[in-house]
Length: 557
Figure 1: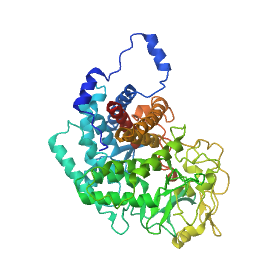
Figure 2: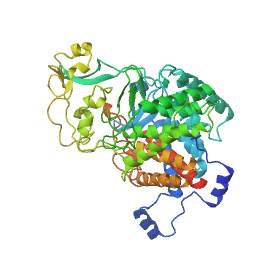
Figure 3: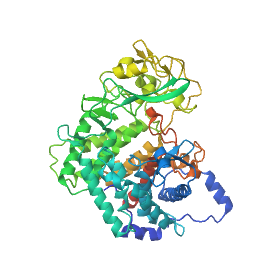
Figure 4: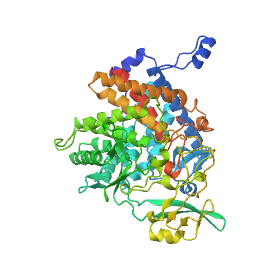
């Protein structure tokens, strides 16, 4: 199981002699020298320090929320004071509080449960453990209704990464434990209803994609959604691989069959190769595949054919859980492909993509000289729409550019439905030009964007996800050479994140440290201009998990 509870007899014994607390400096000069000298490797002591830092940060964030400080709320949160809204990211100058039923909501309480379940690795002051426990239970309440939320595939993130994490905390009272177990069972049954026997996969989304355009009407900005002429009908995204562990962590054989079937179809349909990879060594994951028209695409990537960084993380991590589940599978595995060989290819892919850059650009191809060509690709062989096509510079901060060669795009008007074209007739875009120009669609004008747009954001959430997956693989593999190889790579990622991206070391966003976030410079959804170059809770979640896995790896070797 991926859930890590390091409270074991062996570990407890080790911790008696391996104190997790930072020793007080005996000499002020030594302390100053140490603060100016960066480590050359990532140690267990560093991991424990990161966990203590995470604990302190989230207690700080909890205090802000309790006192209604520094918050930016969804309208629903403002309208209903009794609603439990959950921190998601740093947006709009504050802690962005998310409403019910959103895919990110499990990570905030889940992170607290992770810290509690591994409390022996952390320095605590009096009352802090109790405070974190009560806070985790409080925010966990907001997710109870999601166990029957049949309109999304994201129940693994929402339920398993929160209720599932709670079960590993020994201090969880028995009544709450039984309630959480029941909710997890209910959620699995709900998730299974999204499985299609015909297609062999769990459907991701029920919504149809729309183009989000800003027009000027009577001197005011109007933002509306416009339907496409050829929308997907059965979308499955690579993120869905992260839900399979939720199904595997059950004794119900049918859930295992669903999970392995989904992994099989994803393996067949979701992968392609860079043109330069003529030997086809490094499979890359599309973000989305439409099982209705059998077309791939990238709803969140740079273009319909590109290497969205976090998507490669979902891909790697997802197949790691599949391979780990094979040893306890309650179904016949002979009819399925070689998942283990695929996993090894994915490990090599991420290693190859990273090179010596341990925190990638939000899409690995975003800094290529021809990145704009990937962004403007509307091949009919793909699910041609993504938010990048209408990502106007005015929707981004002045210094941000999504990719090299960023410029306004001229699209085929035929990508929109007849109804949408009628609605747009005669309307001007944000830049004072007609949106429809003959058979062309000009969503962002035709003039070059300001030269101030220079920074291509990176994604620390992808790095943290990679590191956690590498440590996990290194811990479970029987190949000592591969174990050391990928643990070392994870160490390099974690050293980079710790030294340069912890919010006490990175000042990209003003107030990130004060607000209580852990990891700076994550990127959420570039196409929708959402959560760009900012702390996000799931980046913090996987960073905490990676530190826990580092300790588990070292104690197992």
